[in-house]
Amino acid sequence: MATQHSRLAARIMVAPSVLLLFLWMIVPLLATIWFSFQNYNLLNPMLTGFAGFNNYYYFVTDVAFWGAVLHTLQIVLGVLFITVIGGIALALLLDRPFWGQGIVRVLMIAPFFVMPTVSALVWKNMFMNPVNGMFAHIAKGLGLQPYDFLAQAPLLSVILIVAWQWLPFATLILLTSLQSLDSEQMEAAEMDGAGWWSRFIYLTVPHLTRAITVVILIQTIFLLSVFAEIFVTTNGGPGTATTTITYLVYVQSLLNYDVGGGSAGGIIAVILANIVAFFVMRMIGKNLEA
Amino acid sequence: MARRVSNGQKALTTVLAWAVGLLIFFPILWTVLMSFHAEGDAIKSPFEMLSSPWTLASYGEVQERSNYTLHFFNSVVISVGSTVLALVIAIPGAWAMAFVPGRKTKDLLMWMLSTKMMPAVGVLIPMYLGFKNLGLLDTRTGLVIIMTLINLPIIIWMLYTYFKEIPGEILEAARMDGASLRSEIIHVLTPMAVPGIASTVLLNIILAWNEAFWTLQLTTHNAAPLTTFIASYSSPEGLFYAKLSAASTMAIAPILIMGWFSQKQLVRGLTFGAVK
Image (cartoon, rainbow over all chains, first blue to last red; front, side, top):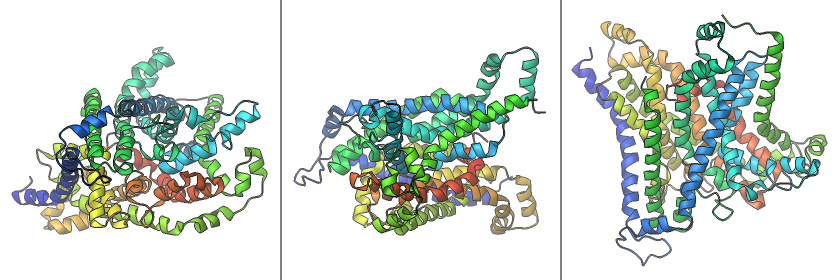
C-alpha cells in the first residue's frame, strides 16, 4: 500500500508538530527542574548556587502547602461531582421531547463560552456580593441577613462558579451520547416490564459510561489548573482558604520573586498532576479502548 | 420510531427544561440587562434596576476608562493568529497520520495528547524569564506563540479524526490518475476536509479567546487581550457594575455567537473524537 516514498513524506510532514511539541514539553520543564535546585531569588541577587533539595523542603513545609493540595482536590472532586450528577440529570431531561429544544440547548450551553474572568467577576459582583449582589437583594427581600459567600464559604463559592462553567460541557457530551442510545432496546425492555429505574441502571448508565469517562478525564485536566477564577475573586484568600497548588506557585514565583522556590513548586505540581492523571487514566483506561 | 409521548408529558418536560435552561443562562442575561442601565441604578434591587431608564452610556464609558478597542483587537489577533499558525503546522502532520499510519501513530497521538496534561505552572517560570529576556513579555507575538503551542495537540487530534473519515479509496484513485502528492492535497483532500477544518478553526478560536492563565501571566497592558482587561475590574477601584457588564457583554458576545454555531462540533472536538 503505502510506498517507501510516501512514508518518508509522511515523516517529514509530522516532524514539525512533533518537534515543536517536544521542545515545548522538554526544554521549559528541564529549565524548571534546573531552577528548582538553585538558590535564585530576584529580590536577593547575592544568594546563588546549588540549593540541593532546600527549595522543595521549603515549598512542602510552607504553611499553605497541604491546604493547597487539599483545596486543589476539593475543587476537582467538587466540580466533578456537581457536573457529572447534574449533567446526567439535565441530559435525561433534555433528551425527552419538548417544545423549543433548540433554544433551550443554546441557552444551556452558553456558560461554557464565557471567558473565566468574566464569569468569575459576574458571579462575584452581581450575585455573591453581600451588599449589592442579587442574592443579597433576595435575602433582604425575605427579611434575612445577606450571606457573604466569598468571605464565609470561599472555596464552595469558587467551586460553584467553576461548576457553572463546566455543567454545560458535561451535559452536552452526555446528551450527545444519550441520543445514540438504541431506542428499540429501550422499548423492548419497557415491554418486558422493566421499570424506569431498572432501565436507567441496566441500559442507560452502561451506555453512558464512556461519555462519563471522557467528561471526568477532560475536566480533570482543566480543573487541576484552575487559576483565573481564583485570581479575580479571592486572590487565594481569605488567608489561604482558596489557595491551590497552581495559585501557590504563582504567588511564590511572580509575587515573591522566588524563582527557585516557585520552580520547586512547579515540579511538585507536575508530579501531582501525573499521579492524578495516572489514576484517572487507569480507572477509565478500559472504557476508552473500544 | 420515536416513542409516543402524550402532550401532557411533553408540556411538563417543556416547562422543566425551559426553567432549567433559563436558570443556567440567567447570569449572562442579567449581565446584558445590567449593561443597559446607569451605574447608580445597577446596584439597586433587581426590580428597581429593571424599571430604571435604559441607556447606552456604560458602553461609552468602558472605552473612556481604558482602550477597549485595543484589547478587543489583541484578542482577535491572538486567537485568530495562533489558530491559523497551528493549523498550518498541524494539517500536514494530521494528514500524514491519517492516511499513512505507521505502527507508532497511535502512540504518537497519545503522546501529543499527554502534553496537554502538563500543568502550566510547571513551565511558567522558564517561559516567563525567557520571554522577559527576549522582550516578548506583553507582546502579541509572544502570546501567539504560546497559544499555538497549547492548542496544537487539540488541533492535530481534531483534524486527525476528521481526515480519518475521508475514504482512502478516493485518494488512491487520484494517485492512479497521476495526481502528485501536492495536487492530491490541494485538489482532492482539501475540499473534502473543509468542513472539518472549519469547525477545528472555530473551536480553537473560542479556546484561545477564553484562555486565562497565560494571558493573565504574560500580559499587562499593550498586548492584553479581553481576559486580562476584564480581570482589571476585580480591583475595588473597578467595581462598577454597569461598566463591568458592558465590557463583559462585548467580550463574550462574539464568542457566544460562534459557540452556538459550533456546538455540534464542540462535543467531538473537546472529546478528541471519543464522543460523536
